[in-house]
Image (cartoon, rainbow, N blue to C red; front, side, top):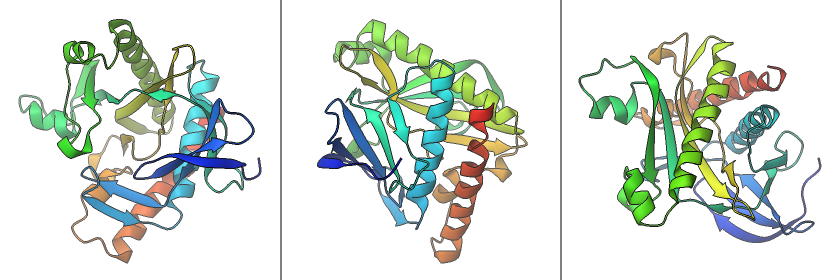
Amino acid sequence: MTQMTKGPEVARGKTKILYEFADAPQQLVVQQLDAISAGDGARRDTIAGKGRLAALTTSRVFRLLNRQGLPTHFVAGGEDDDANEMLVTRCSMIPLEVVTRGVAAGSYARRHPELERGSVLSPRVIEFFFKDDAHHDPMISVEEIVARAIATPAEVERMTELAQATFAVLERAWSERDVLLVDLKTEFGRAAGGALLVADVIDNDSWRIWPGGSEAAMLDKQIYRNLELRDAESLAHVKRAYEEVAAAVAGFTAS
């Protein structure tokens, strides 16, 4: 696919821009940027080529999910000479991050000191976070989601089901490469008619992955979060991890 015919800008996030798609109003063009951020945008940097790697990783992940029969907003693009662009179904995004946890790590480990860090969580844990950078994306209960009309009980149940299924597909794909999928952030949108789709992006900013099950060997954005000095050499190390992940994910569609 060549570069897509973009219309007016619809929305802009920390790492991507959404545009109208001139050829089909029910679709949008998502363009990935070379930006990387952490701490709800408090830490920001530009890594040349990062947008390309994000587009490659996301498109390959969504192709796998589509092949497995999961409903996503992904239509095409991401891997071609297309300015880091993907074509997606237009959705009304639900302002929630749905985090599936398979291993005690990150904020979950801090909130549960009774668990050994790195211990397997069975069954998988599902947590919801309200998207609000100003308040650091606070955790939100199912009851509050429903009370605030963010989503209906049926939608919460469906998001939970799809988040678990998405995690299972990616956990299997990574395990075939001796990589442990620790946790995964998934977002959802309502398509025309109200059907829920796995939406936004799933790239190397969306998960924790530990090759060989070793946290010290991590390849995800936690490397960037952990940087004490964000100099050229350190950011190049981050980019190399993202390149390794994009290359590994290229094999997912053959799984």
